[in-house]
Image (cartoon, rainbow, N blue to C red; front, side):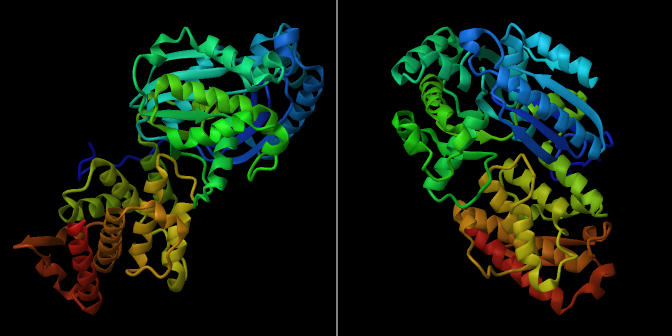
Length: 496
């Protein structure tokens, strides 16, 4: 549990950009991250759809056309890595290279030609890394992760971020196309047969199914477009399974010519979407997961996460990112801790998750001081809403954004569509947190060592501010007006 005196530690990280080349069954992708740390930020991302695993189920060999495309893609990716001055490069290969008769020979060719090491990931490790990707970027995930690639499907049970049962099934998007030859009734039978031996999957009702992989992401984008969802952020997009499965059933039965005309459909992904939709139906049937949560973090992020020390892995990803954010802005984490503690009396009934969110807010509270005063509130709202921060549900993301808005502006001037994701209680919390931080700034100037000379007093249901004798000269109209705002927000918070 996060205590009001939670101590923040600067997160150690390795200097220099980190590159990963992921040689998959369907695509080859290069991702370059800013640093190897608790929550690395992708600063470059490019993929080439090589379809190395196309026809593999029938021939046992890599797709010859895909091999040529992969060679060209790798040359370009390595050149980009040099141009972007990466300090470390990891190259990994998954199901197609692992399963093809000529897979190891191709990997050896790449190693000899480009002077690199290719890490051929086992199915068991691939499953674990996908789950690590979710655990590294979501707060205490509970349920089952599923990473649908071109050649295989990896399923892992996660409990509070810890990995339990896992399996790798030969059910990748390209493999399903090859084996079913377009017969969707046959595909249903193939999928059910592969799931039959996974007794642990039926053993309990999962809270969530965490969907990883390009085909699942495309389905999510299409569904978001169909319901006019107010955010274009895929990571941690959460939807009720029952609602999403209605959409998935339609995709599973529609001809490809109609699927490609749907909003947000990706032409190159269309042939794989019916299979992905059918797989999703079977997963929800077996896990009985109430919600589907989509993840843009998977095997690549898990690969980096596994290489971190246990100490860094144990850190909260959101708070580690916010700590770094504050440090880069020249802001003191000691002031953030003081602000966090100082507010506590106002928010004694908040949940542990809200307390964690408030600590993140305290680290970021001065984010807009360099912006023109007329635009600070709006800029702060959208800066957090559109940030690369992870470990936030969409509701929490908007909630944190609104608290940041109220740090600079008491009254909301515009009702943005994203605010529809909040409940009234969320709005009240955000208003109180942001308004209290604004008052704190006009008392302390965000300099540590000042707030402990002030405190909130609650007597007979009334809120007041007490100042030590050394702080009396700070009292003025600016403080009184902001205290009135805190009092109003506190009364509104108590009513929710």
